[in-house]
Structures are given as C-alpha cells and as structure tokens.
Image: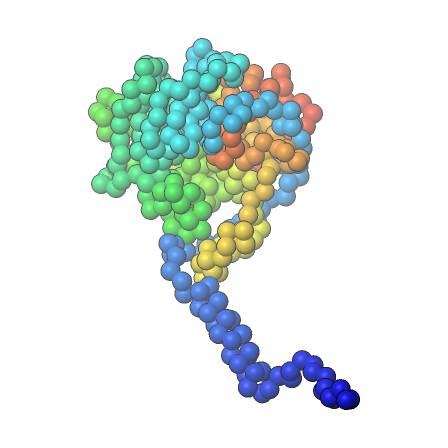
Length: 393
C-alpha cells in the first residue's frame, strides 16, 4: 500500500489579530515603564540649581599617581573606616559601619575594640581631656572615654534633631565644631538623596561642654560634611559636598559671626577636611566630578527619573584617590592622586600625624597611610602649582 501523502508544516503566519496583540503588549510595557519613571514616589523633591563647569584635571589638579605607594592598614578588620583619629601616643582610632570603634597601635597592628556606639561612627577627634569625640550618623555627638564609656553629648539643636551627624573638630578649649550633613536624610540614605535633592538641609554647629548646649552657626548648607579649624582657631571650615565648595565661618576678629567662600568649584566631590595645626588643610575628594550629575543640576524632573532607575544606571563615581593640600588662604599646595587599578578609593578623610597622612574611606575594608615628602611644598608628582586665585570666588 502506498504511504499517504503528508503535507509539510511550517511556522504559522501571524494574523492581524496577533500583530495587534503584540503591539498592545509592547505599548503597555512602554506606558508602564514611562509611568514608573515619571510618577513612582521617591524621597526627594529636587531643587533646580546651576552646577559650575568643573575645572579640568590639569595644572594644580593634574592627574598623578602620588598615592599609589600608600601602606594599607587594618585589612578586613571592618568596613568603612571613614575617619582616622590619632592620639598623642600615635595610636590610631577608626569607626566602622557596624558601630565599632577600634584602636590600632602606631604601626597599624593589634586592633583592639574600644567601644560600640550601635550607630555609625563617622568623624572622630580627641578633646584636650583625652576623650574621643564622635560624630555618629545615627546617635548624634558622642564622647568616648579611655575606658570605652559612651556619653551622648547632643542630639538636636534649635528643636531640630540631627539626622546625619558627620564630622567634628575640637578646639583647644574642648569646644566641638561639627556638622549635621542633612536634617532630612539620614545615613541609611547615604549622601545620595540629599545631594540629588539639593534642598539645603545641612548645618554647621558648635557644642560647648561647659554649658552642655549646641548652637547652630550656619544652616541651609548643601550636605555639610568635613570640619576643620584654622591654626589660630580664628575660623572654621565646612565642606559643602552638594555645592562642590568649602565655606569659612569666622570665629574671631572683626569678621566674627560672618561667613564666606574659602574655595569654590572644586574638581571633585568634597568630603572630609582636616588641619595639621601648622597652616595646612587636607581635603579628601570622594571622586572627581561626574559630568552627568552636573548636567542634571537644573533639571529637577530628570533627577527624580534618575533616582527611579536601577542603581547601576544612576550617575556613578569612579575609583580615584584624590587629596588636596591647601594653605590658610585657600591656595593648593599639594595634589595627591591615584587612579590606577586597585587604587585606595574613595578617600573620605586625610589626617596628618608627623610626616604621615592617614587616609580613611567610607566603603573600603581598610584604611591607608601615605608618607609625605619632606618639604613643605612636596616634590615630584606630590606637588601642585599654586592655584592663582582661580579657586576663589
């Protein structure tokens, strides 16, 4: 018997109904995505502003590898040693993201748990009495004794609670100058939301241990961050991360109680700042500026859209170690960088002790030590030419 004739079958052609359905599904996906990007609730209410054009990384800011040979300390002892405080005996104190404050010997060895704030210790400095004063992002301004006892010094000022106590510098009389980076967004939000909103929620404050009271010196700052007193304690600096600048508040003299711009339009995102007591400030830059983030400064709606995107699609910083040395007139004296593979970055603080600059980081599982050149102005790649007034407003 002959085999029956079988008709070959091929892919079924799409009908008009199929094509219409596919278009409807595609349109629904597009509409849903657009609605999410435009209308999904976010935590910020962005304010339009105009970011200045970032200076090029040349001249006084020329890229170099001066920090490449920094010594790594405390590898894998904890995450996020944001700041490093050094006592008179050379012992190193750092705070980690799990609340621990750990002491290392002068060689960076033998870690020893001193206290746990159960918050997020950020800025650290010693008072004249030897107590460690701590700016804790969650807990406020704290004091830690040599025995590890924790005392809460201040949690609010002018009826407004601190949400992001960030950095502190203590003067020769034990008065603490500190920052509340944002009275709206706490450390759980990190700095991103406050900077993306640009709402001016930062404050510079002063705590007097004699009166046990804190007062607001400046408010309306764009993420108030690092704090540093001048050599004669006649002014205090606060870095304004969201404005890429450093603000000076006068404490003594005919300008006392007023403020001005110490350095404007920085080449990177400013974080911690410290003073070496001899007329040099060390400014840690979290990263060079991000051109996309700057371009969104006058586009509030697009900043909301950016915040709704997955984090990997949002404006990103780069791994680039960056520290500037400044004199008390705001001129660049040192330019220390490293953008090589494996660079220690981001650097969020730089503290000098002797001829060593200790470098902290908000996210690294380690901190670092850099040996400064022997001369005041540094040498080779560690030297930058004077910034001929271009950094002044």
